[in-house]
Image: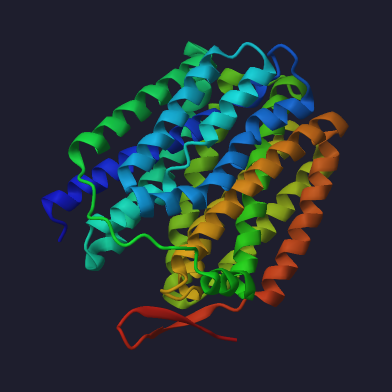
Length: 401
């Protein structure tokens, strides 16, 4: 049972993480068309503006977590929020593609996830920590689903700059909540250096390497698709941007419903790897269908298959990572995983800009070939661990065949 103090912590951390992610999720389906109208915009620079946040997120995710061990969680979270708020305000004011790139770069500097999760871990008892993190994760998933639907409506009614100002305001309120209502945990001894043993273990574990590559590919596809597809809907198929929610809503509802049932089966019947492979296969088939049809309905089918695959993979990969990583190296493993995700987002933005220039069919066939290679890599290289108990009672992963 969560104590009142723990509930307050969960509320604050959830508010912080959701406010931070809301700025990314709300902008994802609408930013590419908006940036393409700014002064100096080119296809490649449009992709850079969409994906550049991933670069600063990737660069700062581990350092911010490490600095929070030394200087405290709340100061680092505050610093990250201030960078994000500044970037959001500049994004709302941006009149050229280069000012938008700078704004998005600063938004990415608000890399508070590691410090925020560490703050929650410091203040929540171990026996209820999993439940607390599940609530935070579920909130992020819900916000993602809602954002995909409401973002086109908000952008159509109030404009894209309004989204920047909205997320800046929410982030400011979340920052104040954490500063005023959540206590700073007692400082532990600051680590003198990052454990090389943990680093080498993480880099040398084949299963973790597969998962890190997988989350990078998945999020590179996500950002690349949303650099290209909104513009394709508008300019190729004449589908107005204010109506895009009519496509996103049923797709998100379907994919989330499938995710809930599929992940339950995967855990209960030990079919995690099969669900993993099905998710990749659906994404690959989606690329192929849109490549051969190249119609509006082909694009909708492609997006549907991508999001079903995305929502099958998103809960499965972190679950596998926790099983593969030992308790001593888990922090490093999660840091590497998060970094891989944001590197993928940055690469996806760059790739999307290039594919806007050279043509959508090149993106589709490249995505299909990458999906085939990804499927083969997971099939042959990933061994799904079974669970056993450590001597200290903690569940650990033991690799099975």
